[in-house]
Length: 448
Ligand code: NDP
Image 1 (cartoon, rainbow, N blue to C red):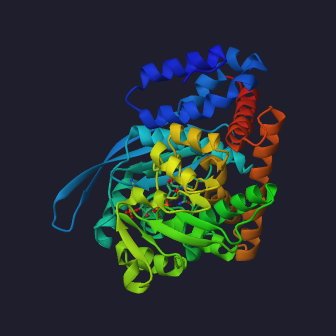
Image 2: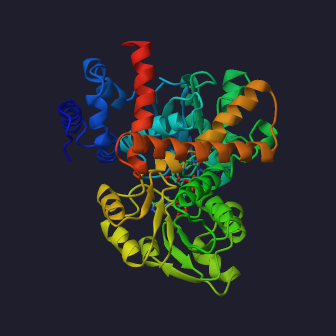
Image 3: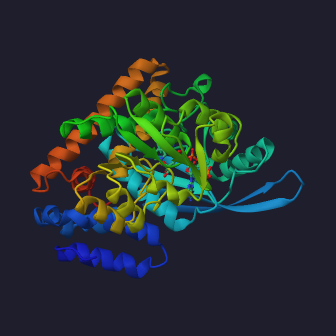
């Protein structure tokens, strides 16, 4: 891909040459820069102060080995990361991912995206991300605890309530956050809100568990309403069956939709009567089973092996909520030919660039993840506020604030797209508005 603006091309060429072995990171930067040419043309300071080149690179990249002892007494080695991408708007903020696919490229793409997502919430947060190639699946609670403690033995020195505030992501749920927070507190001898996603008893926020999935639906509802539509009566498919997917199911079902298919990395379940999020929750959160067991609880459901097949299920709305690049061109074309009218992204960067092109060219509504999945970090920001105040807000208060933030993100993206001559292009609006905010802060703070 090349851009109209020569400076953007030179930045991208430099990154491609330097980081040729980091495809996810390059993909995220390229996607972000695509609509920016007219914005860069409008102010010579962006090029003069190399704002885009500086914005693309993480401010700090921390890599460390994590040694821990398994239940057989054998010492195991994993690799830990924390990417502190941008502090232009506040302390670094972003989740931790534990999954075998974690590497430097995945961490850098997630931290880059996080910076602009956090900015869209309008809360004072910079962007970061971290994690490890450790796989919690199939490990005992004791093994997960020892791994989390070993991970925190290094991470604690880099984080803090005013420095860098991690949270959960794939493979890091309430159990892992508990072990991480416990070790952090012990090492620092301080009780501070340096991690979000905590349990309620330990300073967590009501609605944080539901926030990303609920937020996705609040965003989707605002987008649909702008086009005279709603979730009422719509058939929805949701990939994944983890935190984001489960609560997206709950909220869009409450809004009148029927979720006809959900998946995990092995396969998917289909049921025209609707997939019950409470059973998914029981299978995945409590029993830690595979989604293949769902038909044992609901006999009308059918399990199909192979997760990519979910995109062949006819639907009105698709909400990918599993992982990056889960919708490729073929899957996007299948969605279009089966009559899908909207794709709202819940997972980070779930569509390949070619898939996005196919979706937009066919006139579907399309929301990029940095806008539509910002609900999780928004409520993490609210958890930080509650911790600073030493107060707890009610579920209703946090949920109402989340809804307001998501509707505001939609409005900002739609209005900015229109202002820059790209009416209706929420992807362009999200990238332009978040670029402008981070760039303005960088210009104001000088060359730091
Ligand atoms: P969870 O670990 O709770 O669930 C992840 C789900 O995705 C599981 O069903 C998992 O299946 C599936 N999955 C993971 N990797 C793959 C893969 N390579 N191929 C197919 N399926 C896969 O994670 P979350 O729900 O928290 O996160 C899901 C997505 O949402 C991620 O992209 C994350 O970055 C993003 N996100 C999460 C936020 C949050 O608050 N949690 C906030 C914003 C974004 P299996 O069990 O088989 O691995």
